Length: 213
Ligand code: BEZ
Image 1 (tube, rainbow, N blue to C red):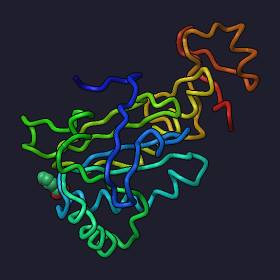
Image 2: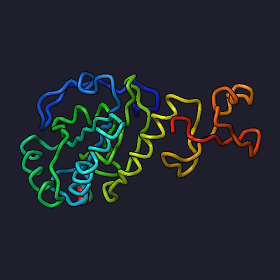
Image 3: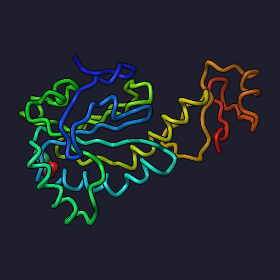
Image 4: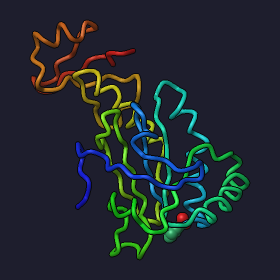
């Protein structure tokens, strides 16, 4: 069955380009992104993995504390050879592991194979996993469309913010912009929780400056 938001991210042990991992141990107590790509030595996938290598310092070091791991059903030898091409063509150095899943164990666990769209390969799935090991966000893209990884940074900012404060983030929100006070918070409570104040557009639509800025 497909994984849903709030479900526990299934644990697994797998071979990766950085050694064998137990997924939950590898995540530790932090945030993680597991993303699949269809096939090694393919053009869109090459740009995707190189792009993630370039922004991994953003995930890892710039306060976000997110670990990233890729997966496809190709074997380890293929991943290891392909990394040279990623580094060369994308002008980067791979700095996160790729899971080799030739028996499709992890791909099946995470429902990453969609046979009516792409035969025997993983589609472009993304799972963002919280420190509680629960699935916080999923995305599924077809093989023909490379993902926007800046959007993943944006949703990480929203997920991390809304896990700490009783706010939600409006359409196209970016880190630093005003947030929406969640409807469960009444005005009296909002005055205490949001000392910077809030603007009421409608009783159900109240904006407050981002609380942790
Ligand atoms: C690609 O990464 O370019 C790709 C992979 C599988 C199918 C189609 C495109």
